[in-house]
Image: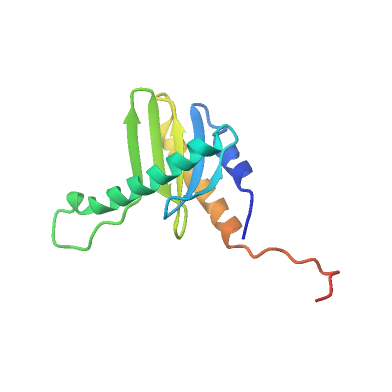
Length: 136
């Protein structure tokens, strides 16, 4: 399956202060990128996001107060002097990363990312359409 999902990522950036978005496979391969991110840079960030997600899962029991099950990873958030990077699950074996300026509405961007994940899930799991007028 080979879909161009960049238009969906671009639509998530319509929120003020949102900057860039990439869709990453669990093994660190770039699946899609917003139009303003160069391919080489997106490949590098994709590999880093996969590692960041793996590290986040590894320390999940750090926020567990008892012998219960290991907490589920939901989101990784990294703050820099010049902004934020949000990383969330985008379905089985995929992650969505979005960068934003320091002034972004964090609740709104998280909400938009969840909406986008729902749309991406449908696009990634929908079988390609077949034309009815073609005979096998």
